[in-house]
Image (cartoon, rainbow, N blue to C red; front, side):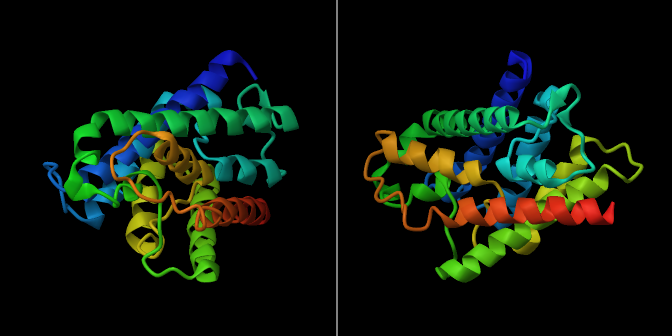
Length: 242
């Protein structure tokens, strides 16, 4: 993998998490101009964040998500991760590294953007929702099922878009993410991306945020295992369907 491809994946994931974390901060934190704008704003914000990140990372194939990389890895009908980027163990690891670094740095960017609000005493103990996902009802097994379904839809439909004549480009994936958020996202906050959750969760743990509370590591395995499983299933079923 070339340095340009690695940086494209890193920067695309950075843009995704900067803007996605930004909409969470704008809606979830008290005292912002977008406070309490609601779930529709979050769903569209994340969809538009994907739209921007995909444009940035075109030369890497714009995975921006290890679940997408895993889905491509197991799909034998896909020859390359991106034009000129072979599906090898080394390249898979490099995608994962780029995605994690980009996700972590994007969360740091969100922290810098909303630092005064994150440090505001009226937001003490609730800041984790800006960075990582959490369930509306904590039930690890069912939360896992939710994340598997959401990520399966993401990877499977992305594969289908590649076999459907259209000229929507990144907009198609953005609308897909909005649709998943509005339909399947309410139970767990729809990570549908292992590093979308892990990178910002690590950032929450290490950043000096006043009164931030726990990083909830007990839940952190769900948005890792669920999306990874859903991505693999999506890639396998796509290979059968398409």
